[in-house]
Amino acid sequence: MAHVFNNIRTVPWHGTASAFSWTVQTRENPRARSVRTLRLLAAATACAAVLAAQPAGSDLRDLLAEALRANPEIVAAQKRYEASRQRPTQVSSLPDPMFSPGYNSNGRPWPGAGLGMEPTSQIGFMVSQELPFPGKRKLAGDMAVKESEAEWQQYQQVQLSVVARLKQAYYRRSYAFSAVDVLDRNLELLQKFLRITEARYSVGKAAQQDVYKAQTQISILETKKVQLQREKRAREAEINSLLNRPPGSSLNRPTALTPMPLPVQLEELYAAARENSPMLRRDEKMIQRAEVAVNMARKEYYPDVTLNGGYYNMGRMPDMFMFRADFKIPLYYFRKQRAAVTEQAQTLVQSRKTYEATNQGIHFRIQDDYLMSQTSEQLVRLYGQTVIPQASLALESSLSSYETGAVDFLTVFMNYITIVEYEMNYYEELQNFYLALARLEEMTARALTP
Image (cartoon, rainbow, N blue to C red):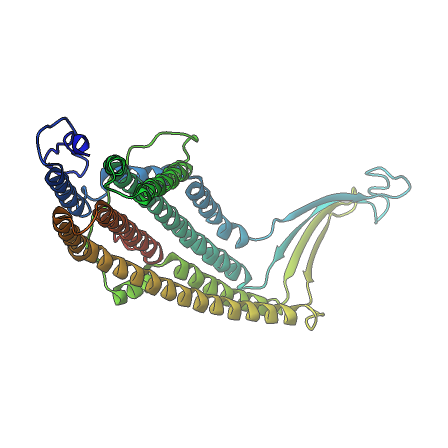
């Protein structure tokens, strides 16, 4: 056992928990040396949990700008809105007129046969123009305008959705990087712990089960690292998809997340949703569209008219002129128009209930995500300011007992693993906090994250 501990020297921690080196040192009490080593490791681990880089800055902003410019869902929604803007003028215009050239002949089937000799022989044309009942064209245009305004709100919602998904993918990827760093740092240290335990076991100072437990713990951390590596690649693929980049495009390492206070109160979020939520605004436009549709259906009780005018050449006889008005009589109103009014009235009720359902759903989701962000904020603060420091004190206490021989090495080892677990929980709650804020941004159209 002595030759193992004599080969360990620690370099003081300089800001990151990975700044340790191990070189040869001789002629020092092995137990005192290992205790001092573990104390330095404990201090490093306690501090590492609360260290963080600057908030997500230019990198995320650049990705968001690229997504708004290149994301195919956003471009498709934009084109759908632009297309909808062309409908009001179409549906509010008069129907196309009809031009009908023709002839009547006597004695022969070709044009001009009997012209000037028979009073029924003629060559001419007729023009027809359908005129909807006054007010119908305006109502049709108003309906199309409301549909276009609803498409604009849908376009805004697609933008918010893409931004929220991109932010969540970015935050999950950032968490995966931070968690992998924690595991890499501690896997190296745990492997050195294992070698110390194996050395003590070789001289009869440790039990074989201690070696197995240390090996098992290393394997568990390795499995977590594999899962996190998959998460990194999956989120990278998701970001490339949202940016419409070729699969496999490289991305910079995301900026580490940093603790921040919850920037808004619950009632402010409710008010922001009522004023800004594109989902609610879209449902409001659909209610207005349904109200116009009811009036339009009622207008169908009134007849449309088609005006016809014609000129016919009679040869040597006087020219003939014709004018006629054709009225479309809603004779079967009890089967068509009345049913159409009922249909549109039911659609109006459905639109209002859809608005209520959307409003209730948004309020629930806002409260749910607000409580999640509030809870995560509290847990981040507790882990950083209380739990991890207390766990560090427990480790220090076990180190003192280890120095007197009251506890074995594995006890100190497991206390250190506990701090690693708390550090992972710290980053996970930090991730949950930012994910909840991103979802709140989507529902309220209000910026909450840096």
